[in-house]
Image 1 (cartoon, rainbow, N blue to C red):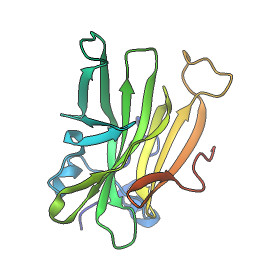
Image 2: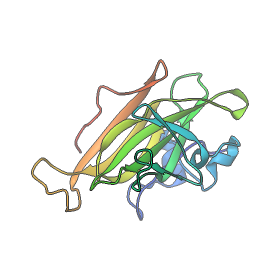
Image 3: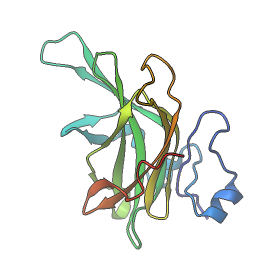
Image 4: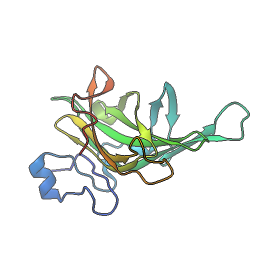
Length: 188
């Protein structure tokens, strides 16, 4: 049996053993999981705010404007998750992308790549903004949802400090669009 997914986190935070993942029905990652489908989400095209961004080895860079010296830099953060987002569907990759546009912020997005038959990408759903300067804890696909756990800044916390507010974002793929599930944004 091949594992079909990913879990990310720094250190041992948010990691389950293989047996725990199996019992809970969570997707789980092994390095090189993209090779099971022949696809590598580190080398794929995503849509962020209506723009196509093509990663090569997990990174993309483009001028912020024609002739501009500043660059928009997009990177894949953590380990991608892999699994089905609906019953009977082909699996999908869920990733978190960080994008710096040259200012003080770094904006994080969750994005999904649907995988079709024969392992080809079917489409990339528009990425959904998670926030500015968050700290990713984990991303998994479980029970047909993309679940992203991260820390963000509270309303009164300075952006220069590390974020401390826990967030669990839940997202579903609905008619080719990634949308917040009813419990999205649950603090905990």
